[in-house]
Structures are given as structure tokens and as C-alpha cells.
Amino acid sequence: MKIDKVILVIFISIALNSCYLISTSPSILIKKDFDGDGIAVLGFSKYGSFLSDNIGRIAADKLTDALFLDGKFNVIDRSKVNQTQAEMEIASPESLSADQIQKLGLKLKANYIVLGRIQCSSNSEYIDDGSDKQLFISFRIISVLNSEVIGMATYKISSNDEITNALNNSMSTIVKRIVALK
Image (cartoon, rainbow, N blue to C red; front, top):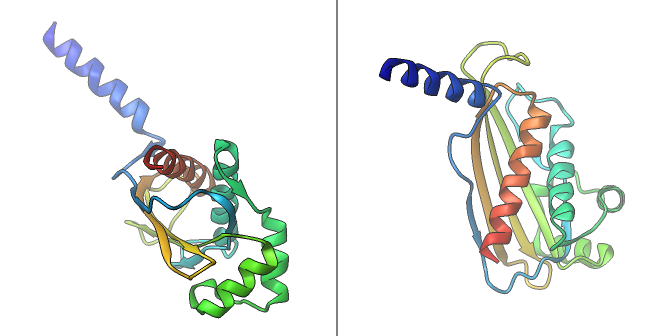
């Protein structure tokens, strides 16, 4: 009887974790003066050959969606962010100067700029939709006023789910944790 219960618990655990396994919980630090009003999320930088070229845009879209759907944040539409980024000829968000952050923020009427990166690795030589992948997501929330980092989040997950679904779930988890800390 005891063995049946153990087998049942193992089977349920495997079934629940087969599509999406969280390796760690998000690490998040947010300063108290962050009010979440006027957030512009720039496209994430991508690292690793396993990721598609548009994964940085998708990651930024998923974070923007999660922030908006939570209802506690005022986010700037990604199309407006993309257009302004193109007008200012910003190729790599990671190399923005304090002056560029302020100009971008003023143009977007944003109080905060989010700069992020996403990295993917796999245990196998080739990555496919069913193989286990490790995603490393990190971003900084920067105040437009003084270019000070006022928030930071990092998250590492393992998933054999499609990357877009894993990103959607990850960004929702991160935003829920940010709300809990506010």
C-alpha cells in the first residue's frame, strides 16, 4: 500500500513538471521609490546561438504584457517604444549612455526604462522544441530622471516547453514577485 502511494506521488510530480520546470525562483530587488508609472520596455539583448533573432522583442513584449495585465503599472506601448528606438538609431539598448536614457525617456514620456537580456543553453548539441533548455532572464529598471538602477530581476528556468510559453510564464512570475515587493 505504501509503495502504491509513493508511485502515485512520483507519477503526479512527473506529470505536473514535464512541461515546465522552474529551477529557481526569481531574484528581485526593487527600491521603495519605484511607483511603476510610465515604464518603457526596450527589446532584450539576446545571447546564445539557440535563440531566434526576434527573441529579444518577444521577451520585451511578454514583460510589457505581464506588467500591463497586472493592472498596477502604467506601461508604454511597445510599438511606440520600437518606433522611438528606431528614430534615435539605438541599435543596442545595453550600451545606452545616461544622456540617451534621458532623451529616450523624455521622447516616450517614460519615467522608467527597462533594459534586459535573455540567454538560452541546452544540454544537447542541437536544440529542438522537445529538448530541455535553460533560460536566463535578467533586466534592470532604470530611472529616467537620474539614470539610477532602481530595480533588478534575474530568473533561471529549465523548460522543455516552447520558449515563447516559457517566457510568458516567467514574465508573469517575475511581475507577481515585483508586485509582492512593492
